[in-house]
Image (cartoon, rainbow, N blue to C red):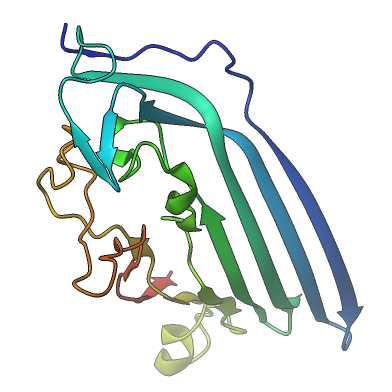
Length: 231
């Protein structure tokens, strides 16, 4: 075969470390405000890398590879890492006086050097994995969610009027979400550097030293949504 997918001999189990610090305070009888900081560190994350590429220049490769029997040797290894820092603030009101409310705001930043072990997500330069460190594909800088439940204080009664019964026994529960966009990788769609991986090459800037565009430097649009339950 021209392409093989072996596993590295030193594969270990991925693991994560998490630290959190929070504070909570009751503002009034039914209202609670809380704030939390979260740190998560991922180590030994799984990735794949073509260890058969033969480098002939700065981000330049040629065939045949180091092992002339194969075009690609996409090795599965556990050399990836990730870091997440996040701050969350929440305001909660327990159900009383016919309504409840929850509002939360998150500000966070996720950084990693790999997303998955499929070959389409390999490094632009298989010999320079440190340059892959960037914002994670899962990074969402800000997110705000507010939800609530309002229950009509009236119940249907045959002795009351039409308007009273029309608005009786209703429950109104909206969810509003506003979030910032996620990063995405800028790709050329063809093999610029000659490593036989046309799905991983990023653009080269036409400035001094021709630097390569970093991983996940694109930013998608934000998202806003409204969900309403009425019953």
